[in-house]
Image (cartoon, rainbow, N blue to C red):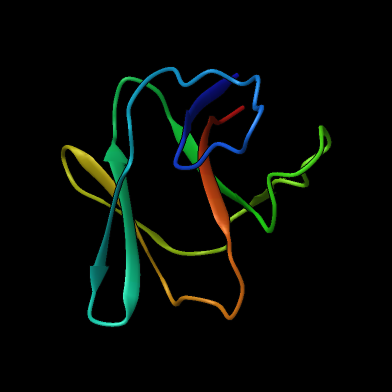
Length: 89
């Protein structure tokens, strides 16, 4: 089940359901955070939103948690990257 998308491509048929993640810059790092509850979510990324078979991969980064938020800090890459949250299985 798709939970939230930070970016949607033209003609995307996926709907956004659930919490909307926050995105901000912290120095040179990209910080993505989302509510810890009601569901356990996994951050995924893809290099493109083109086509029906977008290759989403789990982001390999340490997630910090507190009572209310899950936060991931990432170093930006040299190319565009798209993120979404997906319910953990």
